[in-house]
Image (cartoon, rainbow, N blue to C red; front, side):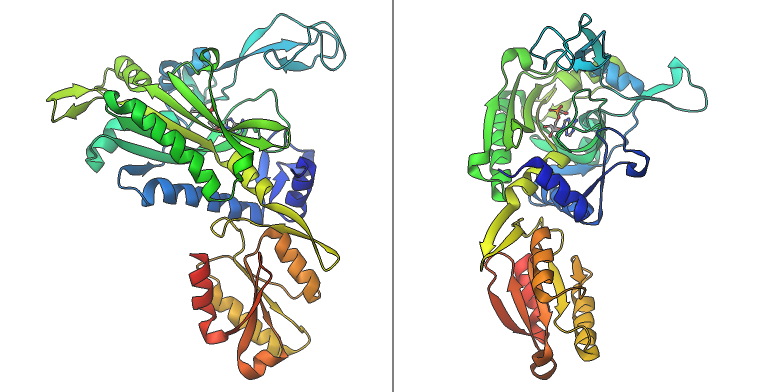
Length: 431
Ligand code: GAP
């Protein structure tokens, strides 16, 4: 497995990921996605949305606000339970998560530690101009609650029958204490969550279904079989809302860690919100002729962790004719750049003109790059390193035969293609 520093430095150099506010020294565990990172991240999200919403008829999408009524977080249990136990070092003043330290003294300076104290992970802010407790709101620590409080809205407007799901992708915020490991644990990140509402009697069956479905999904799009596994939560580690939970773990460079969790949330959230809001959040079962509170199965993945895992498993160093080739073998739906158009001689205006016309024709439906700033060998290397699927070169002969050379990233095989057929050639291979 490639070292995390190698990936972090590739990400910085090639414009995938930068430290937030870098010119001011950075903000801890907050990251910005650069031009290629924004493409890859959008591709991860679009792929999830495609699998969850477009390819199914039992799931609808939602885009709820980040700020919610503060009662939501009391009702959901986050105000009381979304806490880590922390200890402070009395000498160096550093703070640690109690459950993660293995020694009784400070892991850094061996100083004496305070008693563990609970620390809530939610960020607070204020609505309106007065900074008082009454105006306090939280930045959501999970996107799920936006789905639960909209359960009835979606049910009525989409006229869904059980079982059905509501999918959402969006930002979540946690004031994490243990950070590091690049984008693995950030304070601002994105989640891809599905809340799948089922008849309580069928919920165990659907729980199993979603565990398998999500496990397959990562492998279908590039995660290696040997780097992914399922781990069932022990009773003591279950979240306050879950009856059962599996983590999909990935072998990150720092060891096996959570990529996605699939939880059986029972009717905990709908029941709680119905009780506290006084609004009825049930489903009328026409067969049984009665109202039921659905149970919820929740596959909850992190966009940033999926981004990192796909990147790690795509990274390859090869030897090609005695030279090192770094290539990102990302799935065709994930690759940030689909095609690069490269004129072989940039001092021949007719070649440049033809290459630019091809570039303009291909872009629009996909990300295409035009590059003439180096020798062809170097241009190929630059494109391989960011995972570009196809390199199209325009040479002197192209002017005569109106054909271009198309090089495949993975096989490095070259095809000579008629310019009039090029768009179709690319479309067939990237859709
Ligand atoms: N609604 C359930 C929930 O939020 P979670 O296990 O706390 O469950 C779900 O989070 C997923 O969100 C995780 O599997 C992980 O991929 C991602 N995630 C959680 N905390 C994160 C953090 N600090 N940085 C990056 N991703 C995070």
